[in-house]
Length: 458
Image (cartoon, rainbow, N blue to C red; front, top):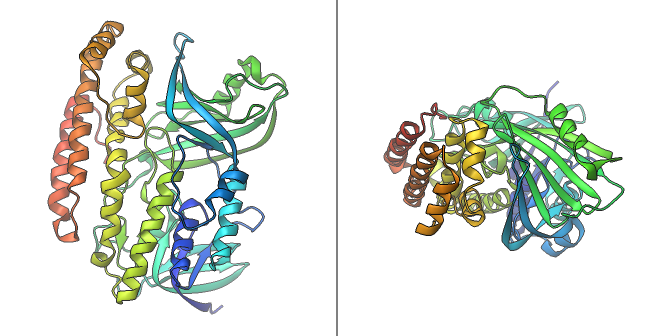
């Protein structure tokens, strides 16, 4: 059957956070944009997610942010994190310096799609993208099946917001650009979550609760409300496989507050726990969100980074189309914005994941529980590094007796994280200097592998 052809300025693949912010940004600049979503309109926005957002996420101002906050944020009073020690059953409370929230992810996704349509974007639901159109190196569209009918979508730029391990990256020939193809399953996390309804309110409805697992992952309990809890877990795919459902089920069974809980829904997914792609542009093609590794590699949080990156990608794509040049160099500014912003922090945080692969759970928990709360938040949260006074260092040393070698190693990794952020601050302003920058970054990574004894991740 011959496929029909539809032409747009920009084709966005995927209707999650990244796809919606990219499409809305481009449409508000006057471009003709289509968003392709494989789910039905009723199922749009239904995505496996922890739902927790630390801090007041500064979404780009291209859609109704107040509506998003008022209707999708079911809990806007998150003030702390609680870290549970599985070895001793002790807990560590870590106050946040700004209030966070928990969302109803399906409602959040539905609002994003509604606002995207309101901005003038054509949204084609029930549309499964299966290949790229790339006649001479430059990506010029995609092919898809919509409601059973084959279609070809032509475009000046394709924005890939198709999620982790995007099929478009399997189909496209990206060898003629710097686009990061050094991607494999071991750099990802497998996750599963359930939404529980419980009869009595929890006492910790102002907290995000975390508990490490044996498989280099963690359990989480995030309160959408005092009686509705997002309960889930994830593990790094470098480790031995675990039965996610059984591990979560067993932990829930041992918590008195979850007696008589009802499971409202359940869902699993894969997400990147790696540094952002070194380059996410190719002639006519840009990747955003999970499809470009824009996820905090320690916590799995991906909503704020996806929104910001997608907004920047669309802005750069709009300018490139206006100039009649959608080459790699013309789209490169997007890379630079990402890497010198949250990209450098996520790359620094990834070093702690690498450190973790070289140690067992007991060692890690002993060291982590000895680190003061704010320094821990800084290291795996907003900064990617942490500073400690001499007094705090001395207290940490005393609390980690028997694990001093591991603690010293962690301090060296932290120093390397600071140096890595400096390298990312000097991310090149054009593809011509990319190889030299990459060589400098990789030399620093080799030092990290020497410090930790971990197997190379990339």
